[in-house]
View (cartoon, rainbow, N blue to C red):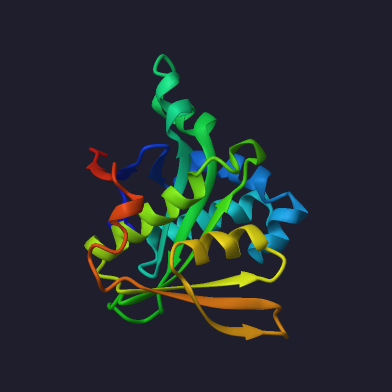
Length: 203
């Protein structure tokens, strides 16, 4: 969506940046993994289709996407240019999908992927997820977050439930669990985003 263009969200371990064209090649290499596609219920796309998808996500008002960077990695490479620093530090992405054909963003479906194996188990997923939710809660006025997670994605199920997501339903057909989080309380996410900071950068 256009609203997060030029926005960076800082945390203790992660930095969230809008999904742009220079991220696509690395993102596409991640999605060549059959395991990741199964865990995220994603289709395999060509590189050209991935670029088309990135442009669509940038322009559609019902999709908010950030690339997750390892903040330490990003800050260590200050001699390199900005784009290469971002690509080198990429570890995953976090997205919110809103109902189409409406300007209201009261409820959104959130999903997260830590694609780099070396970045798992370091708290990146929890901080990125909570930072994204806080951004949507404060700036997009989202009060309810849902997530659909496959039965096999045990790590994600544990992560979401540890944050207070409650199980709403299960689908044996799609083999997935639907979870929900009430974010109407403005302080509900503060404990996991103590170093949260939103920066607006010049384009």
